[in-house]
Each structure stands twice: as structure tokens, then as C-alpha cells.
Length: 345
Image (cartoon, rainbow, N blue to C red; front, side, top):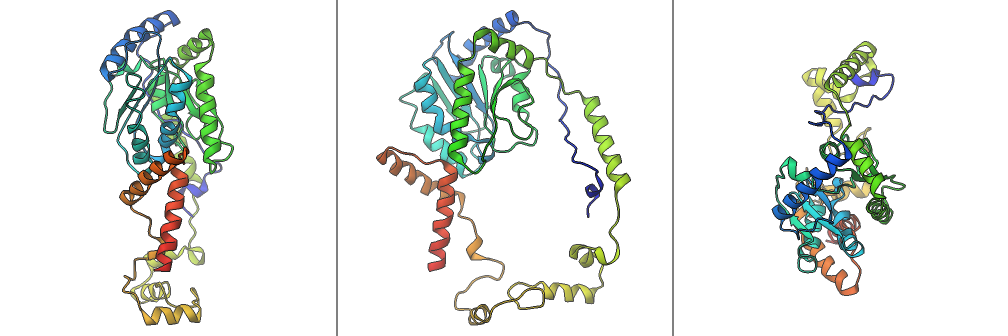
């Protein structure tokens, strides 16, 4: 019942990007990496180690990007691979991002010179990005993804989840077997990174070279987008008359009809469209609690500040017991506990 309902099939469009600036070879790529790595290490305060493999994540710290999984696995990466250095930078934008920052704050002393963490907007010059060995992309969902393209064109392969728009660049990826199972996602991500770090040297550099050859031309994107619009307009069918949505009826009805529709759909009122039990009607009429009509208190989420406060306490308790839970599981438990508390109140 929309313009796009007439499309015969779902069309995927890759966003257009500029190609790599220079044509290169493996030998030239190695030389650029060596030079950029030293500059990147000095810029981020890491130990200047020519043999180090730098893993990097730059972007918003949100659940969608899988940043909490990166934070949970950072100690394991650094302990199991002595040659690894990690750079994590970006502003936390939700409770999972704040949780990740709290976890990483405690690792500074143990991994001094091997871990750089910046929880604010961080701009890294393009030439310094060439110094990274792998780019983290463990997103839970991603419509297209630019970060893997930006790093790939500089000769830095990606490692993460092959979901949505990710997986289009050379790299090491895992398939999400169950997106609701955090343990499965964390284990798969760890195995992918471990495999990527243990790739034979020739295989890795061949992959890095292929990444610089990726091409997403503007002409192709423009032609595909124009074709999609043409198909949508050609196949569009207006659903006039009795097939209209309630929203359409409200928009085109006269004042009297619109009032009737709004009255029928009003909350907390028994109508032919919305039935209420006798108990619910009595509870509504008594109005024992002073609750705003629009504030459905049982469905209000816990604030990010409150969630972060509870997550910090959970981290402390987890460390005491030797086990830290992932952010998604903690957030779910916090919401459930808050709802039960509200219901009891």
C-alpha cells in the first residue's frame, strides 16, 4: 500500500564511493604499511613495534556496531596474541557503548602501550589508517557500511560479521547462526579474528591488495537507483475506496468522520475495535495512581543513565565472581527487573 509495494522484487543498491587513489602492488603496500604503522603508533601512544599487528575500530559505540563484543574480547585478543595492538575510538551513543567504555577503562594499566581507547569523536588521518592490520566490523546489522570500504581501499582488510552490507570487501567474516544468541556471536567473532591473525603472510597480503581494487562506481549506482524508481512508479497501484488504510481514511475524511475515527481508536476505552475486560474498566475508572494518559508506564524503557549505572554495578559483581556478562543480556535483565518492580509498585 505504498509506492514501493509495486516493486516486483527487493532491490539491493550498493552506495557509490571513490576508488583507491593509486594503483599499487604488494611490495608498495608493505612499504606504505611500514611507514604508516610507526606514525599511527606514535599518534596513539602505542609501543613502536614494527612487527605489531594493529586491530582498529573507529565509529559510533552502539549496540548495532557490536562494540560491546569488541570490549569483552579485547583482553583475550591481547593475551593470546602478544604481537597485537588495539585502537578503539568513537563516542558512546547508547547503554552498550557506555558499557564497553567501562569495561575498557579497567584495561589501561595491564596493556599499557598496546591498547588505545578514546571515548569521544576521534579523527584519524587517512594516511595513518594504512598502518592498521585489520579493521573490526562485528555489526549486528548494517545496511551498507562505509568503514570496511574506507579501510579496504587503503589495503586494510576487515574482520567481522557478513550481514547486510558487510562482507562485500575482502576480509575474514562469520555468518550469524543466531542473532539472539550473544555467546554464539562472541565466539564466532573471536574465531574469525584468531583465524585472520594466523593467516599465512602471502595470503594476507593478497587479500589486502584485492581490497584496494574494490570498485563502487557512481554511474552504476545512479543507473540502478533510477531503474528502481522507474519500476516502483510503473508498478504502483492506488488502493482507492474500501481498501484504504485507517491513516488514509483519517487524512481524507471530513471533520465529523475524523472525530468518530479518533474516538473509536482512543486509548483505554471499550469499543467495537478495542475491547476491555470489566476489571480493566473498573481499574481505569478508579484512577488510584496519578498517571498521564499518554504515559504507558509498563512499557517505558529504563533510561540510558540508569542502565549504565546498573551495568557498572554488574561489572563489579561479575569481576568478584570471575564472570562478566555481555551488554545485551544485562540490558534485557535490567528492563525485565524494572518492569517487575513497576508492576509491584
